[in-house]
Image (cartoon, rainbow, N blue to C red; front, side, top):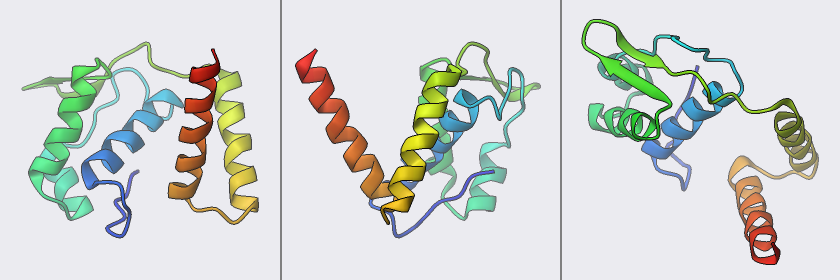
Length: 121
C-alpha cells in the first residue's frame, strides 16, 4: 500500500501522510475504508509508532480520516480529486520520469511551478 524511503529528504511522517492522502484523493481508498492500526502500519513500515500516529493525526486534522475505538481508523468522504487534475498529474509524472527525474526532483519542480503560478495570479 505505502512505503517509506529512508534515504529521502522527506521525513517518514510526511511520506506516510502524503501517500495516504494520494490514495484517498485518487479514490484507491474509498469512503469508510479501514486503515491499518498505527501499531500495525509502524511494524509493516519499520518506523516508530509515533511516526505513523503523527501522520494519522495530520490527516484527521484536515478531515480526511476519522478514528473510533471500535471502528478503527476510516476514510471520510469528499476528498477524491477530479479526473482532470488526476490526468494532469499522471502526465506530469510520465514527463518527469521520461526526463530522468526522481520523485523528490519532480516535487521540487512542481513546487517551483506552483509558486510561480500563485505569484502571477
